Image (cartoon, rainbow, N blue to C red; front, side, top):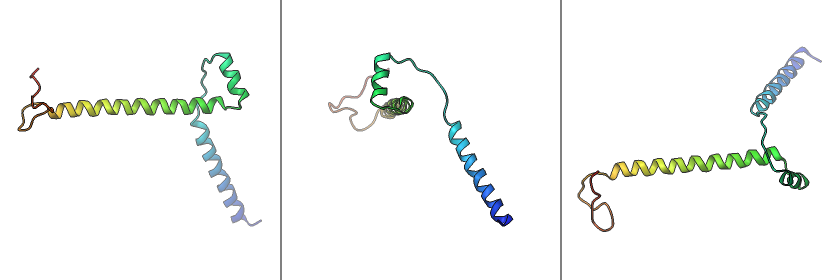
Length: 99
C-alpha cells in the first residue's frame, strides 16, 4: 500500500476518533430517583430511560425559556406604553394611573 494512502487512512481514522470523543464528552453521568413500578414498566416497554429523561428535560427547559421570554416581552411592552400619549392606552379610553 502506498504511503500516501496509508497516511490519508490514518488521518481519516484520527478525525473519526476525534468526532467520537467530542460526541462522547457531550454526555454526563448522573443519577435520578424514579419509583420502582414506573421504572419496571418503562423497561418492560423497551424505553431507553436515559433518552426519555433527556428528551423530557429538553422539553421542560424549552418551555421554561419560552415562559421567561414571554415575561420579558410583557415587561418590555409595559415599559413602552407607560406615560401620556395622544391615543387611549386601553379599550375604554382611560390612561393608567401614575405610580
